[in-house]
Length: 106
Image (cartoon, rainbow, N blue to C red; front, side, top):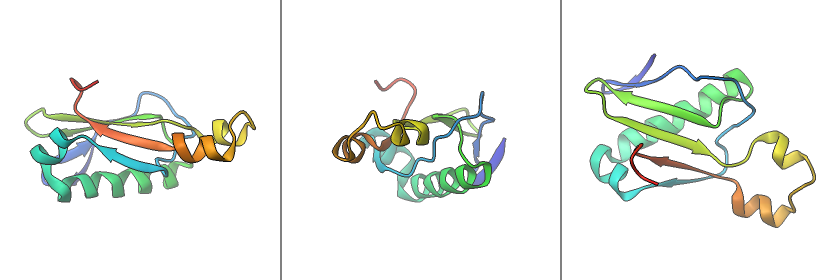
């Protein structure tokens, strides 16, 4: 685990990938109310730094607080998907986003 801020750590990823979390960010209101903008910003900063350092990461990244509270970060489109030609520019603009949510949110 890699500590990012205020007892929050990124869990090891289960597999490699080619996701960069570089689209629009959506965060559920529950996450924002529970952990706040400072932690959400730190998580996003860490996601971008980690993706850049690894030249792509898994679509699912998990952050955990020392008391066991977890948030999921889920990216929608990989680099391969965006470069495949299967999506129009409009579709890429629409679907290139990532979401930060609690595990029990669907």
